[in-house]
Image (tube, rainbow, N blue to C red; front, side):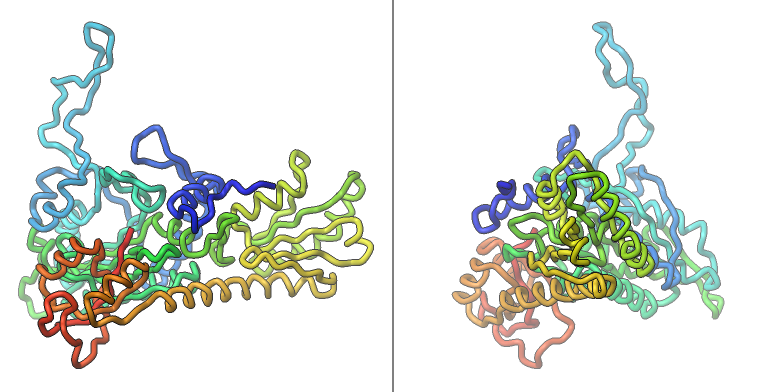
Length: 489
């Protein structure tokens, strides 16, 4: 069957679009800049959501929900916050439509809102206005709240999953009695994101702190995890922010401490989004389509029967039923595909496109020999497995695929991570694509100049720094840090 996927080395951007489209993940909607997440794509997001929701609750967080609409005056209370989001805000000014004299549907000018409403780009302002009513004493702290929601950021240049006008995410918003406790919380949540990326998505990431130019608008410090995609570009996969007392001061959120004094609350916020589906595609996908790590795959094993008569189909079904029951008992999701509308070859192709980790094929000859053909999606390798071994072989294969995908991604990231000390080498490595670790003098002017010259940004400042970082690659001045640069999505 002819491939519908553009090869990665021919056109990576088109390859990505092809995988999203033909893998049944998402499509463009009638609303410009927005996407329709199809069932397969949404099932992946549900798996991410379920994992994180469990981990959040294990660490003491609870879910709540806050309004989609935010009064414009709320956004204006935190200066850096409004400056950071003003250009991306969608604004509601009226609440009613009417028919004009020509029978056309128009906005009713008499139905103008007293105050414009912002469609939620992020929820710090509406949440901290609410927390003012919830927090009075140190006994009310810490307050550990998470929200699963959609947000709107009016992007002009969009790409499915990676950057859309509306997307799904979770946003945690916590309140604490001390700076130390809030910083600890921000780093704890970053660790959970790093755990998700590595252990579930099989995406190795670098972590560290953002520069002041790249941090979240309104944060004191932003911490990030960054993945390296197959085209050599970085992808910010999750961020956690130490907000200090900025939003507490903006919304006058104080508490009575144990000594009887009034203090402003210390805050964090943190989130990941449907962008993680894009990370999965660009880290593991190949020229045959999507490749899913088993721990995040909605369907881990598909059994495809080969038959000509209904009696043969029934024999295969009966033979495979005990195996499927045993796999499900071990937490494996499995489907028996007896759809008569498509040929086995079409099914093989479709399940490859969708990234199903393991395919088991059983036909009349296999019934006679008590064997099954088992194929792994990541390498395409096939093996003939006896029924005596099949029950244990499939779960073991899923574990091996999970680890193999992580090792492969780690090897690719390490191969494309470079340490440089000169401008010429820096430019060459940035052009090649990858993470480039280089000395920086710590000034915003130099950071912006490097971005203008190379389109590379500081992805993060590593926590561990050498005693002597060297001299800045651009200015030659003593470096303050060695930082990770890359071109990024």
